Picture 1 (tube, helix red, strand yellow):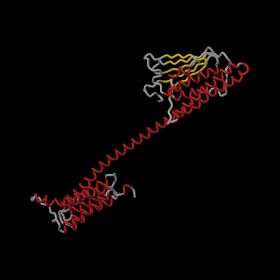
Picture 2 (cartoon, one colour):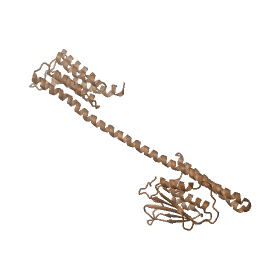
Picture 3 (tube, one colour):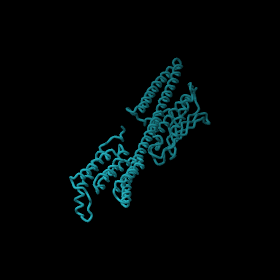
Picture 4 (cartoon, helix red, strand yellow):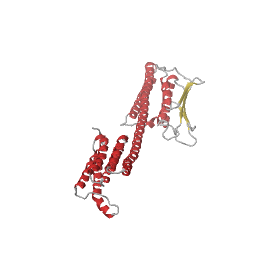
Amino acid sequence: MSASQRVTRGDVLAAVVTWSVAVAGLLLLPAISAMEPAEPVELPAAGSWPWWLVLLALTAQAVPVLLARARPVPALIAVAAIPVLLAVVGPTGSGGLVTLAPVVVVYRATVGGRRLWGVLAVVAALLTVAGAWRGDLATALTALAQGVLLVLIGVVPAQVVGSRRAVLVAQAGELRALARERDALIATAVATERTAMARELHDIAAHHLSGIALMASAIDRQLDTDPVAARQGLRAVRDQSRVVLTDLRRLVGLLREDDPAELSAWSLASLPELVGESATLRVLRAPDGAELGAGIGPLAQLAGYRMVQESLANARSHAPGAACEVTVDDRDPTLLVITVQNGPPTGAPLAAEGGGNGLRGMAERATLVGATLRHGPTVDGGWQVRLAIPRAMTNDGDDA
């Protein structure tokens, strides 16, 4: 049995209240009628067998009220048939007492949006028969109007309430759909961020390990010819290993929800520490004195940081001994431009297998944050990499 077919506490309450009101009318109407002797109401005397017959009819109508929601069609037919039986075998003047239950049953049977127009027509017909029994044509017409009116009194509020409920259900469904859509967008954004961080993990490892491999190759050639330079190279390998461990630990912390890392270590503000003595850093700040990189989101700042890091590493590998300059132009209110330029090499390049991956990684990160990456040789034989990052107009940044 489905939930809509079960008798609930509300059904019982409706039956009890309807029966109580009808019985109260049976008990009080004689006294009320006595107050208006000009318009007496014919009712059976309390305690007489016709009186008990009316009470039985009212009690029997409580059952259809109880089942109106769970069994609407049988309840409607039964609640309308009882007045007909009472009109046939019962006393005259008691038909008005059994009209309350039909109204209640019609309301409860149709409030859920059920289309029971055929059954409602039968109900109106039965109520008309009950009212017109033993009457003339005028009485029959009046009974017909009353039967239709009783059905309408139950149907109209039911339709209004049902429509209101349908609107509320639709609104609740729309809110749930919006919530699911919002959760899906958040989940997609989080997945995109974590995918980008995972790619950074790969790029950082490849970048540092490639540098360590190049330095180890140079040290191997210098062990016999230049021990001092070899020792310096070993110290550089040690420092580079510490850097890669720190970077990997920090990025893994970003991927772990229970141990968040500090992303600001890879922001534009940390460029002086990254550049150090390996290049010249020139920062052109905004005229209004705003913070460096204002309007640039965390992921875009990370892309800028990694572009500088990769460009300097490429310069060390492919243009050893060349002078490098890093320029951060923060003056444009719509763009932040980072340029890394190195001069021609003064020594033999330390070429490694798989060249071009660094530039490919820069391009992917630039696309991810909506930035524009340009790179190519300069007129003096050097190399330039230029990254233009659009500035968001909100505090969250374009990729926050």
